[in-house]
Image 1: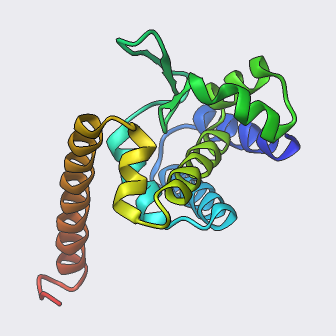
Image 2: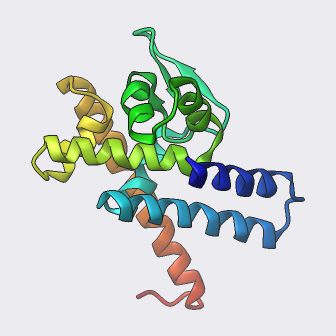
Length: 173
């Protein structure tokens, strides 16, 4: 749990700093470090975590109410149904786990990576089935979610390609 609180301090420092290009770069590096660490710890592709982070579109401090009376917490929109398992995994209380998911970026990403790992294991390594299971076990919801994931992946790919062309002075790959 100590690691989570160190991440929280770093996030607080980044959020309290004035917004400048150097601060934006530091924020980006911090996000990348959290994603890379979580991906490595749980043997999941960091690119998939980044895509899920974009699809989920949650924010630090944010809790979203679902129609089924559950809530989704923070950047990876971790469902509160995972709280008991995550609390046991982290050796923390459910309340402390909730606060970490809500307020600590790296903790939320780590939880999302762990949940994705559970889904991938359940899907026997099938990446797309695992990504669908990350969201739901209901076929209709899985399919809808996978459509969103593929749309975001396509958008990120186009943006990366455009940046590559811009970085090369307008010359394509």
